[in-house]
Image 1 (spheres, rainbow, N blue to C red):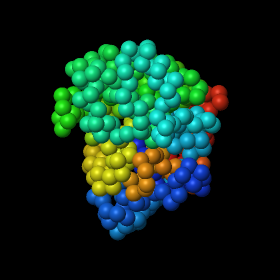
Image 2 (image 1 turned 60 degrees about the vertical axis):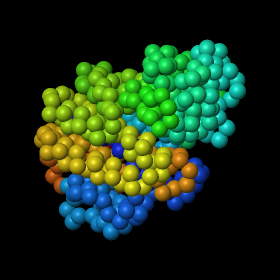
Image 3 (image 1 turned 90 degrees about the vertical axis):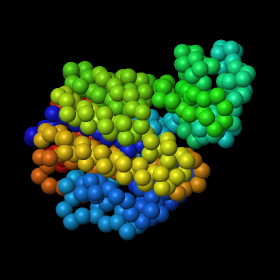
Image 4 (image 1 turned 45 degrees about the horizontal axis):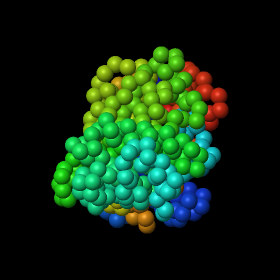
Length: 396
């Protein structure tokens, strides 16, 4: 079997394609991120996704698939118990998560945790509720600056976030406080998937703006992943966007910080023009962070269009021995109630210039086929305890 020298996995963060059979158990009945965007917008300018087969896989509104799609495509179900970023990405690389991470959306963090955080950081906590990051800075930013307090908040995700003004809090101190929060939330009943530093600038309402100095403090994967296996044999494992944070650097040989999803694709295009041998793993977070959680259908749709434009540039830059897989880590239906992720199937759309033909594949019940296929492609064994079966033979 001819194999690929370079394997790209590009995650369109939260671009789900419809409810799974167990979605109701997660409070997500009738969800469909991509489908509802198409229905409400009628059509999107996405010629590159369309020619690869995305609309043959899942369509709605006024759009239709193509007669001869270039890519191979199918739906992937999530085997893990969850619908968050880490669970989805870890599963792609072979880890099945049985126990979901803790969320504090409805109640805020327990008083015991907040008291210990205040003591260790020597700062009074304000906020302690579920909120939009931009909204809570507008609400409490002036108080934080004037009193030296510390804004702590959560969201629908399993996350503890700390805001800090770069001029008055100091980035190094903000990161120190986040490291303390990460240590405290290793306790099982407080175990969140990520602690995130959310720095911002500005001095008063209407002027506050978050900066790109965000930093994620994620839990380490619960076991070795395909990334470790690839790195161990000397292959390149390149992370773009928040991949390095999601895996705590485990199995990563080089990382690129992205300021936006557009920037992330621009970085991926530049990486594609360079020589390397291995895996390039990309997360494009704006679909989720800017539009899904804020329930902005049009914003989400326009972000897909911006991605498609750069996808066209990337496809041109691909070499004959490259394979790209487009997928997602969960859903975040902007037409649904609330602000939470949604439990959904995700797309799998694969393309190479040397593929003999495109078309539908049989659906799979785990995201782990991605990592397993990469492992077979590079001739490495899946780590002990991982899941996933390779479909590489169907991608040639």
